[in-house]
Length: 118
Image (cartoon, rainbow, N blue to C red; front, side):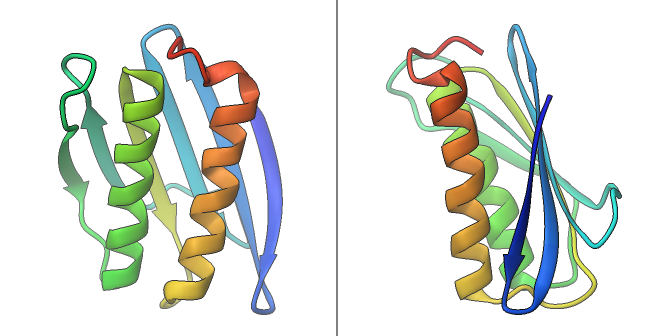
């Protein structure tokens, strides 16, 4: 498991990544370690577009976008299952979502995931 603490626009988020042989579970949570909304994505074969399902929908549309984009990017990079949970105390907003997504993708990419092995 790897974890980063990210401060964005005066807010603190914990970004955690748990790696498995066939995928990744990632959690983004504000101020505490909590589960939140959940999306799951899977790439069935190399080069295919990921299939994504929202299991627990968020109230905030930007949170939904962040969760879906994160799941799809992780699934595409690892060629496996990606489950992403996002918990926030309020609307995240586009700039914060972009920064959180960048941190998460960097954790996956530079954590040995470049070759597609989860």
